[in-house]
Length: 535
Ligand code: SF4
Image 1 (cartoon, rainbow, N blue to C red):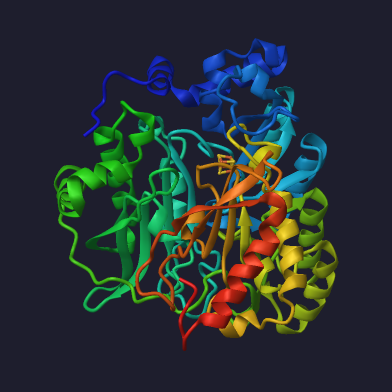
Image 2: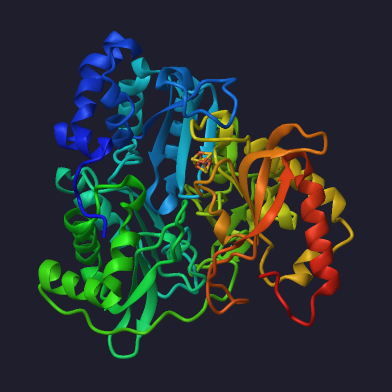
Protein backbone atom coordinates (compact mmCIF):
# COMPACT_ATOMS: atom_id res chain seq x y z
CA UNK A 1 0.00 0.00 0.00
CA UNK A 2 1.12 3.54 -0.61
CA UNK A 3 -0.21 5.31 2.41
CA UNK A 4 -0.48 9.05 2.85
CA UNK A 5 2.82 10.58 3.94
CA UNK A 6 4.98 12.42 3.10
CA UNK A 7 2.59 14.58 1.09
CA UNK A 8 3.44 15.21 -2.56
CA UNK A 9 3.33 18.80 -3.80
CA UNK A 10 -0.27 18.54 -5.01
CA UNK A 11 -1.39 17.32 -1.60
CA UNK A 12 0.57 20.12 0.03
CA UNK A 13 -1.07 22.94 -1.95
CA UNK A 14 -4.51 21.38 -1.44
CA UNK A 15 -3.86 21.25 2.30
CA UNK A 16 -2.54 24.83 2.27
CA UNK A 17 -5.68 26.31 0.72
CA UNK A 18 -9.02 24.76 -0.27
CA UNK A 19 -8.95 24.52 -4.08
CA UNK A 20 -12.50 25.75 -4.72
CA UNK A 21 -11.75 29.02 -2.93
CA UNK A 22 -9.48 30.08 -5.79
CA UNK A 23 -12.55 31.31 -7.66
CA UNK A 24 -12.82 34.26 -5.34
CA UNK A 25 -9.20 35.25 -6.04
CA UNK A 26 -9.75 34.89 -9.78
CA UNK A 27 -12.72 37.23 -9.67
CA UNK A 28 -11.34 39.74 -7.19
CA UNK A 29 -7.63 39.81 -8.06
CA UNK A 30 -6.30 37.85 -11.00
CA UNK A 31 -8.89 38.91 -13.60
CA UNK A 32 -8.28 42.55 -12.68
CA UNK A 33 -4.53 42.51 -12.25
CA UNK A 34 -3.70 40.09 -15.06
CA UNK A 35 -1.71 36.92 -15.64
CA UNK A 36 1.47 38.09 -13.90
CA UNK A 37 -0.39 38.48 -10.60
CA UNK A 38 -1.35 34.78 -10.34
CA UNK A 39 0.18 32.72 -7.51
CA UNK A 40 1.99 29.68 -9.01
CA UNK A 41 0.10 27.14 -6.84
CA UNK A 42 -3.18 28.65 -8.02
CA UNK A 43 -2.04 28.83 -11.64
CA UNK A 44 -0.64 25.31 -11.88
CA UNK A 45 -2.90 23.71 -9.31
CA UNK A 46 -6.12 25.15 -7.91
CA UNK A 47 -7.28 26.74 -11.19
CA UNK A 48 -8.15 23.23 -12.38
CA UNK A 49 -11.00 23.00 -9.89
CA UNK A 50 -12.72 25.61 -12.04
CA UNK A 51 -11.89 23.98 -15.38
CA UNK A 52 -8.83 26.10 -16.18
CA UNK A 53 -5.50 24.77 -17.47
CA UNK A 54 -2.70 26.83 -18.92
CA UNK A 55 -2.22 25.74 -22.51
CA UNK A 56 0.99 24.83 -24.26
CA UNK A 57 3.04 27.68 -25.69
CA UNK A 58 2.81 27.41 -29.51
CA UNK A 59 5.96 26.05 -31.09
CA UNK A 60 7.33 24.18 -28.05
CA UNK A 61 8.34 20.81 -29.54
CA UNK A 62 7.20 17.50 -28.09
CA UNK A 63 9.39 15.35 -25.85
CA UNK A 64 12.02 16.40 -23.29
CA UNK A 65 9.87 19.16 -21.83
CA UNK A 66 10.79 18.13 -18.27
CA UNK A 67 13.70 20.59 -18.34
CA UNK A 68 11.42 23.53 -19.17
CA UNK A 69 10.00 25.85 -16.52
CA UNK A 70 6.19 26.20 -16.44
CA UNK A 71 6.58 29.66 -18.00
CA UNK A 72 8.66 28.26 -20.86
CA UNK A 73 6.18 25.46 -21.50
CA UNK A 74 2.90 27.35 -21.23
CA UNK A 75 1.70 30.68 -22.48
CA UNK A 76 -0.67 33.14 -20.86
CA UNK A 77 -3.83 31.62 -22.31
CA UNK A 78 -6.07 28.97 -20.84
CA UNK A 79 -8.08 25.98 -21.88
CA UNK A 80 -11.49 26.21 -20.20
CA UNK A 81 -13.44 22.97 -19.79
CA UNK A 82 -17.21 23.18 -19.50
CA UNK A 83 -18.70 20.10 -17.85
CA UNK A 84 -21.86 18.76 -19.45
CA UNK A 85 -23.09 16.08 -17.06
CA UNK A 86 -24.87 13.41 -19.06
CA UNK A 87 -23.71 15.25 -22.20
CA UNK A 88 -26.95 17.20 -22.10
CA UNK A 89 -27.35 20.58 -23.81
CA UNK A 90 -30.32 22.66 -24.87
CA UNK A 91 -30.05 24.52 -28.13
CA UNK A 92 -30.05 27.74 -26.09
CA UNK A 93 -26.98 26.50 -24.19
CA UNK A 94 -25.38 25.43 -27.47
CA UNK A 95 -25.82 28.93 -28.93
CA UNK A 96 -24.40 30.46 -25.78
CA UNK A 97 -21.34 28.20 -25.95
CA UNK A 98 -20.84 29.26 -29.56
CA UNK A 99 -21.14 32.94 -28.57
CA UNK A 100 -18.65 32.53 -25.71
CA UNK A 101 -16.26 30.72 -28.02
CA UNK A 102 -16.49 33.43 -30.67
CA UNK A 103 -16.11 36.23 -28.19
CA UNK A 104 -13.47 34.89 -25.81
CA UNK A 105 -11.91 31.75 -27.33
CA UNK A 106 -11.07 32.55 -30.96
CA UNK A 107 -13.95 30.39 -32.17
CA UNK A 108 -12.45 27.15 -30.81
CA UNK A 109 -14.41 24.21 -29.43
CA UNK A 110 -13.42 20.58 -28.93
CA UNK A 111 -15.81 17.86 -27.81
CA UNK A 112 -14.01 15.51 -25.43
CA UNK A 113 -14.63 11.81 -25.00
CA UNK A 114 -16.03 12.62 -21.55
CA UNK A 115 -18.92 14.75 -22.75
CA UNK A 116 -17.17 18.04 -22.02
CA UNK A 117 -16.61 21.03 -24.29
CA UNK A 118 -13.17 22.62 -24.23
CA UNK A 119 -12.49 26.19 -25.31
CA UNK A 120 -8.98 27.55 -25.95
CA UNK A 121 -7.15 30.88 -25.97
CA UNK A 122 -9.10 32.12 -22.94
CA UNK A 123 -7.58 35.14 -21.10
CA UNK A 124 -7.77 35.38 -17.32
CA UNK A 125 -9.32 38.84 -17.67
CA UNK A 126 -12.35 37.31 -19.41
CA UNK A 127 -12.99 34.39 -17.07
CA UNK A 128 -15.52 36.11 -14.75
CA UNK A 129 -17.60 37.26 -17.73
CA UNK A 130 -17.48 33.75 -19.20
CA UNK A 131 -18.67 32.21 -15.93
CA UNK A 132 -21.49 34.72 -15.70
CA UNK A 133 -22.60 33.92 -19.25
CA UNK A 134 -22.38 30.13 -18.76
CA UNK A 135 -24.10 30.12 -15.38
CA UNK A 136 -26.94 32.31 -16.66
CA UNK A 137 -28.00 29.38 -18.87
CA UNK A 138 -27.26 26.63 -16.34
CA UNK A 139 -23.76 25.61 -17.48
CA UNK A 140 -20.74 25.35 -15.20
CA UNK A 141 -17.02 24.64 -15.07
CA UNK A 142 -17.02 23.64 -11.37
CA UNK A 143 -14.65 20.71 -10.81
CA UNK A 144 -14.38 20.12 -14.55
CA UNK A 145 -10.70 19.34 -13.83
CA UNK A 146 -8.69 18.80 -10.62
CA UNK A 147 -8.83 16.22 -7.84
CA UNK A 148 -12.59 16.17 -7.39
CA UNK A 149 -15.69 14.60 -8.90
CA UNK A 150 -15.43 15.29 -12.62
CA UNK A 151 -18.29 15.35 -15.12
CA UNK A 152 -20.76 12.50 -14.68
CA UNK A 153 -20.89 10.54 -17.91
CA UNK A 154 -24.43 9.66 -18.78
CA UNK A 155 -26.17 7.72 -21.49
CA UNK A 156 -26.62 10.21 -24.36
CA UNK A 157 -30.08 8.75 -24.97
CA UNK A 158 -31.21 8.89 -21.34
CA UNK A 159 -34.95 9.23 -21.14
CA UNK A 160 -35.58 8.85 -24.87
CA UNK A 161 -34.30 5.44 -26.02
CA UNK A 162 -37.07 2.91 -26.55
CA UNK A 163 -34.89 0.04 -25.34
CA UNK A 164 -33.67 1.76 -22.15
CA UNK A 165 -33.74 -0.36 -18.96
CA UNK A 166 -33.94 2.65 -16.66
CA UNK A 167 -33.66 6.42 -17.21
CA UNK A 168 -30.49 7.62 -15.39
CA UNK A 169 -31.40 11.33 -15.64
CA UNK A 170 -32.70 11.66 -12.04
CA UNK A 171 -29.56 10.03 -10.62
CA UNK A 172 -27.22 12.30 -12.62
CA UNK A 173 -29.24 15.38 -11.68
CA UNK A 174 -29.23 14.47 -7.98
CA UNK A 175 -25.46 13.83 -7.92
CA UNK A 176 -24.75 17.16 -9.61
CA UNK A 177 -27.16 19.21 -7.53
CA UNK A 178 -26.19 17.70 -4.17
CA UNK A 179 -22.48 17.17 -4.52
CA UNK A 180 -20.70 19.13 -7.26
CA UNK A 181 -18.96 22.09 -5.65
CA UNK A 182 -19.27 20.56 -2.15
CA UNK A 183 -16.00 21.47 -0.34
CA UNK A 184 -16.28 18.26 1.72
CA UNK A 185 -15.41 16.15 -1.33
CA UNK A 186 -13.38 18.70 -3.31
CA UNK A 187 -10.01 17.47 -2.05
CA UNK A 188 -9.79 13.87 -3.25
CA UNK A 189 -6.48 12.05 -3.72
CA UNK A 190 -6.89 12.34 -7.49
CA UNK A 191 -9.61 12.85 -10.09
CA UNK A 192 -12.82 10.85 -9.65
CA UNK A 193 -14.68 9.73 -12.77
CA UNK A 194 -18.32 8.65 -12.76
CA UNK A 195 -20.69 7.11 -15.29
CA UNK A 196 -24.39 6.22 -15.22
CA UNK A 197 -26.38 4.48 -17.93
CA UNK A 198 -29.62 2.60 -18.31
CA UNK A 199 -29.08 1.68 -21.94
CA UNK A 200 -28.44 -1.95 -22.92
CA UNK A 201 -25.54 -0.88 -25.15
CA UNK A 202 -23.73 0.24 -21.96
CA UNK A 203 -22.82 3.44 -23.74
CA UNK A 204 -20.69 5.17 -21.08
CA UNK A 205 -17.47 3.09 -21.13
CA UNK A 206 -18.32 1.95 -17.61
CA UNK A 207 -15.29 -0.34 -17.24
CA UNK A 208 -12.86 2.58 -17.04
CA UNK A 209 -14.48 4.87 -14.49
CA UNK A 210 -13.90 5.12 -10.76
CA UNK A 211 -17.60 4.41 -10.23
CA UNK A 212 -20.19 3.24 -12.73
CA UNK A 213 -23.85 2.48 -12.33
CA UNK A 214 -25.09 0.24 -15.15
CA UNK A 215 -28.79 -0.32 -15.67
CA UNK A 216 -29.99 -3.85 -14.91
CA UNK A 217 -33.27 -5.54 -14.05
CA UNK A 218 -33.22 -7.38 -10.71
CA UNK A 219 -35.51 -10.46 -10.81
CA UNK A 220 -37.33 -9.39 -7.62
CA UNK A 221 -36.60 -5.70 -7.22
CA UNK A 222 -37.07 -4.53 -10.82
CA UNK A 223 -34.90 -1.97 -12.69
CA UNK A 224 -31.92 -0.45 -10.89
CA UNK A 225 -28.15 -0.41 -11.22
CA UNK A 226 -25.20 -2.78 -11.14
CA UNK A 227 -22.32 -1.17 -9.22
CA UNK A 228 -18.78 -1.09 -10.66
CA UNK A 229 -15.76 0.59 -9.08
CA UNK A 230 -12.06 1.13 -9.61
CA UNK A 231 -11.52 1.46 -13.37
CA UNK A 232 -9.05 3.81 -15.00
CA UNK A 233 -6.58 3.91 -17.87
CA UNK A 234 -3.56 6.23 -18.06
CA UNK A 235 -0.16 4.62 -17.51
CA UNK A 236 -1.41 1.84 -15.18
CA UNK A 237 -4.63 0.77 -16.87
CA UNK A 238 -7.10 -1.32 -14.89
CA UNK A 239 -10.67 -2.31 -15.67
CA UNK A 240 -13.36 -1.64 -13.07
CA UNK A 241 -14.81 -4.51 -11.04
CA UNK A 242 -18.36 -5.34 -10.10
CA UNK A 243 -19.10 -5.37 -6.39
CA UNK A 244 -22.00 -7.76 -7.02
CA UNK A 245 -24.37 -5.25 -5.44
CA UNK A 246 -27.72 -4.05 -6.75
CA UNK A 247 -28.40 -0.33 -6.30
CA UNK A 248 -32.00 0.92 -6.22
CA UNK A 249 -32.51 4.15 -8.14
CA UNK A 250 -33.46 6.00 -4.95
CA UNK A 251 -30.19 4.92 -3.27
CA UNK A 252 -27.91 5.61 -6.25
CA UNK A 253 -26.78 9.14 -5.32
CA UNK A 254 -26.05 8.07 -1.72
CA UNK A 255 -24.06 5.07 -2.95
CA UNK A 256 -22.11 7.40 -5.25
CA UNK A 257 -21.45 9.69 -2.26
CA UNK A 258 -20.30 6.74 -0.16
CA UNK A 259 -17.80 5.61 -2.78
CA UNK A 260 -16.46 9.17 -3.16
CA UNK A 261 -15.93 9.41 0.60
CA UNK A 262 -14.15 6.03 0.73
CA UNK A 263 -11.78 7.46 -1.85
CA UNK A 264 -11.39 10.70 0.11
CA UNK A 265 -10.80 8.95 3.44
CA UNK A 266 -8.83 5.84 2.45
CA UNK A 267 -7.32 6.76 -0.94
CA UNK A 268 -3.57 7.02 -1.30
CA UNK A 269 -2.03 10.46 -1.23
CA UNK A 270 1.72 9.82 -1.12
CA UNK A 271 2.50 9.04 -4.75
CA UNK A 272 0.44 10.85 -7.33
CA UNK A 273 0.77 8.10 -9.92
CA UNK A 274 -0.68 5.58 -7.44
CA UNK A 275 -3.50 7.74 -6.10
CA UNK A 276 -6.50 6.76 -8.26
CA UNK A 277 -9.21 4.63 -6.64
CA UNK A 278 -8.12 1.61 -8.71
CA UNK A 279 -5.04 1.18 -6.52
CA UNK A 280 -7.12 1.05 -3.34
CA UNK A 281 -9.49 -1.46 -4.94
CA UNK A 282 -6.55 -3.56 -6.08
CA UNK A 283 -5.32 -3.76 -2.46
CA UNK A 284 -8.72 -4.23 -0.81
CA UNK A 285 -10.53 -6.37 -3.36
CA UNK A 286 -14.26 -5.99 -4.14
CA UNK A 287 -15.54 -7.79 -1.02
CA UNK A 288 -13.78 -5.58 1.49
CA UNK A 289 -14.66 -2.48 -0.54
CA UNK A 290 -18.34 -3.40 -0.47
CA UNK A 291 -18.24 -4.17 3.24
CA UNK A 292 -16.65 -0.79 4.07
CA UNK A 293 -19.17 0.98 1.83
CA UNK A 294 -22.14 -0.70 3.51
CA UNK A 295 -20.95 -0.63 7.12
CA UNK A 296 -19.10 2.68 7.38
CA UNK A 297 -20.83 4.87 4.82
CA UNK A 298 -24.33 3.66 3.96
CA UNK A 299 -25.47 2.06 7.19
CA UNK A 300 -27.37 -0.62 5.31
CA UNK A 301 -26.56 -3.68 3.22
CA UNK A 302 -27.03 -3.54 -0.52
CA UNK A 303 -28.88 -6.50 -2.03
CA UNK A 304 -26.87 -8.84 -4.23
CA UNK A 305 -27.58 -8.22 -7.87
CA UNK A 306 -27.09 -9.77 -11.30
CA UNK A 307 -24.71 -8.44 -13.96
CA UNK A 308 -26.22 -6.58 -16.88
CA UNK A 309 -26.43 -8.70 -20.05
CA UNK A 310 -23.70 -8.15 -22.67
CA UNK A 311 -24.33 -5.07 -24.81
CA UNK A 312 -26.31 -5.46 -27.99
CA UNK A 313 -24.93 -2.63 -30.10
CA UNK A 314 -21.97 -0.33 -30.67
CA UNK A 315 -23.25 2.27 -28.19
CA UNK A 316 -22.21 5.30 -30.21
CA UNK A 317 -25.81 5.98 -31.36
CA UNK A 318 -24.70 7.16 -34.81
CA UNK A 319 -27.51 7.14 -37.38
CA UNK A 320 -31.27 7.67 -37.12
CA UNK A 321 -33.14 5.93 -34.28
CA UNK A 322 -36.70 5.82 -33.01
CA UNK A 323 -37.39 7.26 -29.55
CA UNK A 324 -39.89 5.77 -27.11
CA UNK A 325 -42.27 8.66 -27.89
CA UNK A 326 -42.15 8.00 -31.66
CA UNK A 327 -39.85 10.94 -32.47
CA UNK A 328 -36.34 10.26 -33.79
CA UNK A 329 -32.85 10.94 -32.46
CA UNK A 330 -30.08 11.49 -34.96
CA UNK A 331 -26.49 10.54 -34.13
CA UNK A 332 -23.90 12.60 -35.98
CA UNK A 333 -20.25 11.92 -36.56
CA UNK A 334 -17.57 14.55 -36.77
CA UNK A 335 -13.83 13.88 -36.89
CA UNK A 336 -11.97 13.40 -33.63
CA UNK A 337 -14.13 15.80 -31.63
CA UNK A 338 -13.11 19.00 -33.33
CA UNK A 339 -15.82 21.55 -33.97
CA UNK A 340 -15.90 25.36 -33.84
CA UNK A 341 -18.21 28.17 -32.81
CA UNK A 342 -19.66 28.22 -36.32
CA UNK A 343 -20.39 24.49 -36.29
CA UNK A 344 -22.08 24.77 -32.88
CA UNK A 345 -24.26 27.62 -34.15
CA UNK A 346 -25.12 25.68 -37.31
CA UNK A 347 -26.05 22.68 -35.18
CA UNK A 348 -28.32 24.76 -32.92
CA UNK A 349 -30.02 26.37 -35.94
CA UNK A 350 -30.51 23.07 -37.76
CA UNK A 351 -31.86 21.36 -34.62
CA UNK A 352 -34.34 24.16 -33.97
CA UNK A 353 -35.40 24.24 -37.63
CA UNK A 354 -36.20 20.55 -37.27
CA UNK A 355 -38.28 21.19 -34.15
CA UNK A 356 -35.70 20.02 -31.60
CA UNK A 357 -34.46 21.88 -28.53
CA UNK A 358 -32.13 19.19 -27.19
CA UNK A 359 -28.62 18.03 -28.14
CA UNK A 360 -26.39 15.47 -26.42
CA UNK A 361 -22.67 14.77 -26.55
CA UNK A 362 -21.42 11.18 -26.38
CA UNK A 363 -18.35 9.56 -24.78
CA UNK A 364 -17.26 8.71 -28.34
CA UNK A 365 -16.89 12.38 -29.39
CA UNK A 366 -20.18 12.29 -31.30
CA UNK A 367 -23.31 14.48 -31.25
CA UNK A 368 -26.98 13.61 -31.04
CA UNK A 369 -30.00 15.73 -31.91
CA UNK A 370 -33.04 14.52 -29.94
CA UNK A 371 -36.80 14.88 -30.52
CA UNK A 372 -36.79 15.14 -34.33
CA UNK A 373 -40.10 14.40 -36.09
CA UNK A 374 -39.61 11.68 -38.69
CA UNK A 375 -40.39 13.99 -41.60
CA UNK A 376 -37.74 16.49 -40.44
CA UNK A 377 -34.86 14.00 -40.33
CA UNK A 378 -33.85 14.34 -43.97
CA UNK A 379 -33.82 18.14 -43.83
CA UNK A 380 -31.78 18.12 -40.61
CA UNK A 381 -29.17 15.80 -42.10
CA UNK A 382 -29.00 17.84 -45.33
CA UNK A 383 -28.33 21.02 -43.34
CA UNK A 384 -25.59 19.45 -41.25
CA UNK A 385 -23.63 17.53 -43.91
CA UNK A 386 -22.00 20.73 -45.29
CA UNK A 387 -20.62 21.63 -41.83
CA UNK A 388 -19.05 18.19 -41.41
CA UNK A 389 -21.70 16.50 -39.25
CA UNK A 390 -22.99 13.32 -40.85
CA UNK A 391 -25.36 10.56 -39.77
CA UNK A 392 -23.89 8.20 -42.38
CA UNK A 393 -20.14 8.31 -41.74
CA UNK A 394 -17.53 6.01 -43.22
CA UNK A 395 -16.40 3.32 -40.72
CA UNK A 396 -13.24 5.20 -39.79
CA UNK A 397 -14.87 8.60 -39.51
CA UNK A 398 -17.33 6.96 -37.15
CA UNK A 399 -14.84 5.24 -34.92
CA UNK A 400 -11.74 7.43 -34.77
CA UNK A 401 -11.07 9.45 -31.63
CA UNK A 402 -8.19 11.72 -30.69
CA UNK A 403 -7.13 13.59 -27.57
CA UNK A 404 -6.09 17.26 -27.50
CA UNK A 405 -2.47 16.63 -28.45
CA UNK A 406 0.43 19.02 -28.88
CA UNK A 407 -1.62 21.91 -30.20
CA UNK A 408 -2.67 22.86 -26.66
CA UNK A 409 -1.68 20.13 -24.18
CA UNK A 410 1.49 20.65 -22.15
CA UNK A 411 2.06 16.91 -21.69
CA UNK A 412 1.81 16.05 -25.37
CA UNK A 413 4.66 14.66 -27.41
CA UNK A 414 2.90 14.68 -30.79
CA UNK A 415 0.01 16.29 -32.66
CA UNK A 416 -3.21 14.25 -32.76
CA UNK A 417 -6.28 16.07 -34.11
CA UNK A 418 -4.85 16.74 -37.56
CA UNK A 419 -3.19 13.30 -37.65
CA UNK A 420 -6.59 11.72 -36.94
CA UNK A 421 -8.37 13.80 -39.59
CA UNK A 422 -5.71 12.96 -42.17
CA UNK A 423 -5.83 9.27 -41.27
CA UNK A 424 -9.62 9.22 -41.66
CA UNK A 425 -9.45 10.85 -45.11
CA UNK A 426 -6.59 8.59 -46.11
CA UNK A 427 -8.40 5.41 -44.97
CA UNK A 428 -11.62 6.43 -46.72
CA UNK A 429 -9.62 6.48 -49.98
CA UNK A 430 -7.46 3.44 -49.28
CA UNK A 431 -10.21 1.10 -48.09
CA UNK A 432 -12.94 2.16 -50.48
CA UNK A 433 -13.11 -1.40 -51.85
CA UNK A 434 -13.37 -3.10 -48.45
CA UNK A 435 -16.91 -3.41 -47.01
CA UNK A 436 -15.84 -2.94 -43.39
CA UNK A 437 -19.34 -2.92 -41.86
CA UNK A 438 -19.95 -6.44 -43.12
CA UNK A 439 -16.62 -7.57 -41.70
CA UNK A 440 -17.18 -6.24 -38.21
CA UNK A 441 -20.39 -6.21 -36.17
CA UNK A 442 -19.25 -2.97 -34.56
CA UNK A 443 -17.06 -0.28 -36.12
CA UNK A 444 -13.32 -0.90 -35.92
CA UNK A 445 -12.00 1.66 -33.49
CA UNK A 446 -8.88 3.80 -34.01
CA UNK A 447 -7.83 6.00 -31.07
CA UNK A 448 -4.89 8.44 -30.99
CA UNK A 449 -3.18 9.81 -27.87
CA UNK A 450 -0.53 12.51 -27.85
CA UNK A 451 1.44 10.96 -24.95
CA UNK A 452 1.47 7.90 -22.62
CA UNK A 453 -1.56 9.19 -20.73
CA UNK A 454 -4.74 7.81 -22.16
CA UNK A 455 -7.22 10.62 -22.62
CA UNK A 456 -8.40 9.00 -25.85
CA UNK A 457 -8.57 5.52 -24.28
CA UNK A 458 -6.05 3.84 -26.59
CA UNK A 459 -5.97 0.60 -24.60
CA UNK A 460 -9.68 0.10 -25.32
CA UNK A 461 -9.42 0.48 -29.10
CA UNK A 462 -8.95 -2.14 -31.78
CA UNK A 463 -6.02 -0.02 -32.95
CA UNK A 464 -4.62 2.36 -30.34
CA UNK A 465 -1.81 4.77 -31.09
CA UNK A 466 0.30 6.27 -28.30
CA UNK A 467 2.22 9.40 -29.23
CA UNK A 468 5.99 9.37 -29.01
CA UNK A 469 9.02 10.38 -31.04
CA UNK A 470 10.07 7.61 -33.42
CA UNK A 471 13.00 7.13 -35.75
CA UNK A 472 12.14 7.39 -39.44
CA UNK A 473 13.82 5.64 -42.38
CA UNK A 474 16.46 8.40 -42.51
CA UNK A 475 17.37 7.97 -38.86
CA UNK A 476 15.64 11.20 -37.83
CA UNK A 477 13.48 11.57 -34.68
CA UNK A 478 10.00 12.47 -35.91
CA UNK A 479 6.50 12.48 -34.37
CA UNK A 480 4.92 9.04 -34.39
CA UNK A 481 3.07 6.44 -32.40
CA UNK A 482 3.59 3.20 -30.50
CA UNK A 483 0.95 0.70 -31.63
CA UNK A 484 -1.48 -1.13 -29.30
CA UNK A 485 -3.73 -3.76 -30.86
CA UNK A 486 -6.79 -5.69 -29.79
CA UNK A 487 -8.33 -3.64 -26.99
CA UNK A 488 -12.06 -3.21 -26.50
CA UNK A 489 -14.78 -2.85 -23.92
CA UNK A 490 -17.62 -5.31 -23.40
CA UNK A 491 -19.68 -5.58 -26.54
CA UNK A 492 -21.75 -7.97 -28.55
CA UNK A 493 -18.68 -9.45 -30.23
CA UNK A 494 -16.52 -10.03 -27.14
CA UNK A 495 -17.65 -11.54 -23.88
CA UNK A 496 -15.05 -9.83 -21.73
CA UNK A 497 -13.53 -6.38 -22.06
CA UNK A 498 -9.79 -6.36 -22.59
CA UNK A 499 -6.97 -3.88 -22.76
CA UNK A 500 -5.00 -3.64 -26.01
CA UNK A 501 -1.48 -4.98 -26.01
CA UNK A 502 1.58 -3.08 -27.07
CA UNK A 503 3.05 -4.65 -30.17
CA UNK A 504 6.68 -4.72 -29.16
CA UNK A 505 8.82 -2.53 -31.33
CA UNK A 506 5.95 -1.61 -33.61
CA UNK A 507 5.91 2.11 -34.21
CA UNK A 508 4.58 4.24 -37.03
CA UNK A 509 5.43 7.77 -38.04
CA UNK A 510 2.55 10.26 -37.93
CA UNK A 511 2.64 10.44 -41.74
CA UNK A 512 2.40 6.67 -42.01
CA UNK A 513 -0.75 6.04 -39.95
CA UNK A 514 -3.10 5.59 -42.94
CA UNK A 515 -0.77 3.19 -44.69
CA UNK A 516 -0.17 1.16 -41.52
CA UNK A 517 -3.84 0.85 -40.61
CA UNK A 518 -4.70 -0.17 -44.17
CA UNK A 519 -2.10 -2.94 -43.99
CA UNK A 520 -3.38 -4.24 -40.64
CA UNK A 521 -7.03 -4.16 -41.69
CA UNK A 522 -6.40 -5.83 -45.04
CA UNK A 523 -4.37 -8.59 -43.42
CA UNK A 524 -7.11 -9.19 -40.83
CA UNK A 525 -9.78 -9.16 -43.54
CA UNK A 526 -7.84 -11.68 -45.64
CA UNK A 527 -6.93 -14.05 -42.78
CA UNK A 528 -9.99 -13.99 -40.55
CA UNK A 529 -11.94 -17.19 -40.13
CA UNK A 530 -15.71 -17.22 -39.90
CA UNK A 531 -16.96 -14.59 -37.49
CA UNK A 532 -13.55 -13.94 -35.99
CA UNK A 533 -13.40 -10.40 -34.72
CA UNK A 534 -10.50 -7.99 -34.83
CA UNK A 535 -9.99 -8.38 -31.07
FE1 SF4 B 1 -2.53 15.58 -23.37
FE2 SF4 B 1 -1.52 13.14 -23.28
FE3 SF4 B 1 -4.08 13.57 -22.51
FE4 SF4 B 1 -3.42 13.72 -25.07
S1 SF4 B 1 -3.28 11.86 -23.81
S2 SF4 B 1 -4.68 15.22 -23.95
S3 SF4 B 1 -1.37 14.58 -25.01
S4 SF4 B 1 -2.25 14.34 -21.52
